[in-house]
Length: 203
Image (cartoon, rainbow, N blue to C red; front, side):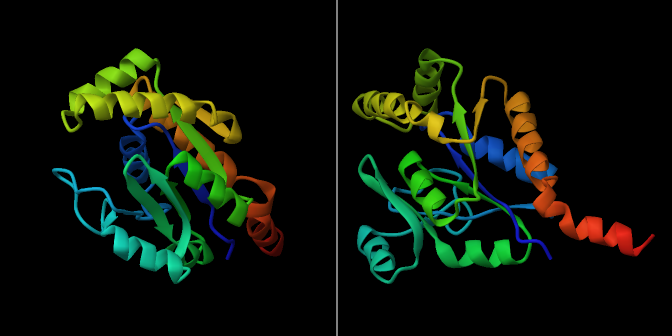
């Protein structure tokens, strides 16, 4: 069995990375899976613990770091985000394509641990559209929105560290772009070696 593919997806807050990946998973059932991240931020309406994130306290998060359980972690605003390493390794060893939705800082750390990871950065069509989306969520104060916009600018300056850039103007197009990227990685020669062997042996 071939080892699975690790796909890292990052984007500024409000760019729709969660929505894009969710749609990709729906369209590639049994092939792509989501690694659930851990965070210290408050749970939002409609989110489920253990599905959207593992919601923990800062003390619990620090304990996981101290015990070496985290693939990566980063501080974003006033909260901490990270990826438990165990479930990721298990899925990759079983040949699954694993998506990590993580912050830019965390994305850099994952690349160090998994140089073969495919990194996708999602950008908004414009800063004004990003601001409109952030305000439309109705979850942040004015101060928090302005802070997120400043962070977004600094994050987009690091987009060149990623392998692919996907613009999320229309959701359908962004989803198709990500699916195309995943399929191209699955068709790489090193992932098709077993298929080549199978074809030869069944001649």
